[in-house]
Amino acid sequence: MKKIYLLILLALIGIKVSLAQPSAQTDPDIYVCGPCNGSCDNLQFDKPGKCPHCGMVLVKTKLSDFKKQLALKPVTICFYLQDGVEVLDFAGPMEVFIAAGFNVFTVSKNYKPLRAQTILFVTPDYTVDDAPPADILAVFGGDTGPGVIDSTVIAWIKKQKVQSYFSVCTGAFILGKAGLLDNLTATTYHLQIENLQKAYPKTKVLANTRFVDNGSVITTAGISAGIDGALHVVEKLRGRAYARGVAEAIEYDKWVPENGLVINK
Amino acid sequence: MKKIYLLILLALIGIKVSLAQPSAQTDPDIYVCGPCNGSCDNLQFDKPGKCPHCGMVLVKTKLSDFKKQLALKPVTICFYLQDGVEVLDFAGPMEVFIAAGFNVFTVSKNYKPLRAQTILFVTPDYTVDDAPPADILAVFGGDTGPGVIDSTVIAWIKKQKVQSYFSVCTGAFILGKAGLLDNLTATTYHLQIENLQKAYPKTKVLANTRFVDNGSVITTAGISAGIDGALHVVEKLRGRAYARGVAEAIEYDKWVPENGLVINK
Image 1 (tube, rainbow over the protein chains, first blue to last red):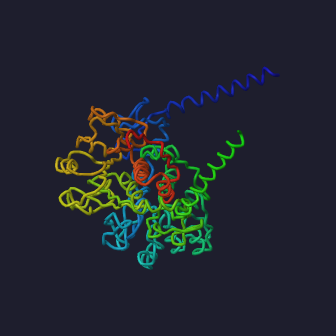
Image 2 (cartoon, rainbow over the protein chains, first blue to last red; image 1 turned 60 degrees about the horizontal axis):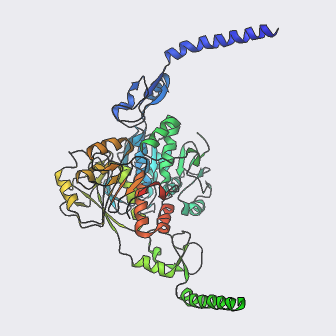
């Protein structure tokens, strides 16, 4: 009897192997450039090594996965920037999303140039009156007082038909004002945890987490935590291997994806 | 005999205690706000707790050290930004230096607004013709080709009378062109290590270090490594405790000061 079982088992293994082989032939391992936001991101190679165009180490992947990656819809992210916005709050995620090959544009209340953190003189691409649609709307901290984030801005944020909202630092107060944090879990700059909780009692505000993802609303902790939150968005849309490639490209060596809280993908 | 030694020893301890006591009275422990770049940075408290103005946890220090800190000359840093400059290359150090209370201004070749990384529309404060003096001149990567960093820019860089030069990422190529890396050790973006070495054979180019400090020339690795390099500059000018306060303020939790190489303070 044992022999019969063994023969059946070997026959089954044989079937599995024969089934697997044609699949491996039609879906071979290939080597591709890590995300560098250059045209070489679309090239494939049959041997490991370095990309002859940008010098990045080639990454092994399945041809089918690479084809899926290329067929993905481009992601467009709107950066709302106010006068007094904190520089690294927006510049960190901007670097991450550009490195990931996403489309990024900036919007402000009007075309008047703004001073990021009183230093950097920035002119927005669009205003709230003429901004094109986006997949993600991102808001940032720094000055988020009523003088710069007024009812016009809040009304504009509320009417956006985006897949998700993303805030860095005290940008969470802007989402709160727009009623977008009600009954959700959120985070903000470490010195503003208690204030956000007081201002928006329907929201569960957490300290000690780099970001909180509720599915359609992602909030991050302060300033440099925006980089982690943006890498999380890339991971969510393009997979962890791709996000790791972006982190390596921008030399954010110490990225720990698990430092955030994912409530709902 | 033993008793006599013991008495002498006790007498010496007594002298030490009596000498130490007046000193402790004139130089007591005080509590100060961590660096938050607000006016509360200048306040002192006699008990531990949180700053009533900005909410930061108060840090224990000696009154004499605090007075020395307040008496320090303000540091001024010139950010040279070219068309095509990488966003996080300059925005990371800008955030760090502003948080440290340093003065920061931006300079470009002319007043024409530039596109940082093709996305962010920035207008410089000054041009190479009218920029005020600075203590540190900082240059950054992204597009550093001859079209944007030409002989006018190189001549301007060379004639600056600064205490130190600071580069992030491929900004090292700009310092190299100006002859500022000759006979020094340097680093750059991880994919450009070999190219920098080929272009400037008199320079010892190192991989796998977040920054290299030669004393008057500091170069950092790519993109986000500029944050580490800037924190190193803050540490050099204001001490490690102060730099740690800045890292905490911007939530750059994983700062490891030892990840760089200091050749000459």
